[in-house]
Length: 346
Image 1 (cartoon, one colour):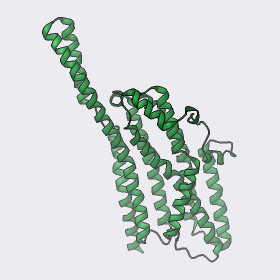
Image 2 (spheres, rainbow, N blue to C red; image 1 turned 135 degrees about the vertical axis):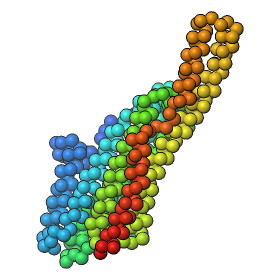
Image 3 (spheres, helix red, strand yellow; image 1 turned 60 degrees about the vertical axis):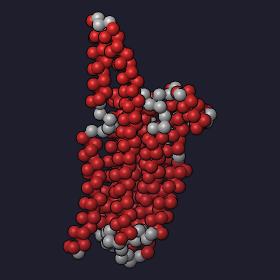
């Protein structure tokens, strides 16, 4: 059976020379490499320059600072979104050890499949195309109308350029977000060993997903702050629906992949428990036929292991991650509530 899975993996991933681990940086990291600082400081500097230039130009045309909060939130989003995508790319490299620990296949096959998935998830052309498509959709739905009364059309052009840039980066991050969840689902197609229950790497994966979701939620909150800082706010049904959709997407992103891991752990424990039970029965028969001290001690060890398997947690997260779920559920309702309050006050 293991051999057939191995052949299946090879047929899916093709020649190993095409799936070597990619060590090059993402285009988002190369983009700010002109600054001799780490990528997060590079994007902070770049977004600061965008904010200062946009603010000065709009002040020149409008002679007002009333647009500063909106420009500030867009600049924060530019730095935040790009930094999170790069950070996620670096963190996903740690998934290699997790897969080697739980997939019951030859190491080379697992590594080739992992490299292939990393190539798909962080495909730069697809990431950029995702950003463009999301931005086009937002424009067609009229969600890039903010209600500002500008004296000059140049001011409207400047803030929309910042908005488009921030939205493209959001779409760039959305693509690997979805692909990562699909990758977790695919893991369930492979034979898994008992380490999926015992290994700390499983809980590392649960914690990593929690961090991914928390980062995405922080971006979601800043987008809400941006819209609430504009005259239009979230007053149209389309804007509320669009914003609420991403709240549900965040919730699904956390729960569905984690639930897939949960199902893998249950399935693997059931399979291994079946094999272990047959060995336990054989050992029990040996004890009854030859009840010496060594056999009794061995049977007791078997029973202890069975008890541990029964008590083993089959969820890849704990109370810390459950708190994140609760927060993610509350966030969309909180934003809508703020909009209602603002509307009443207005």
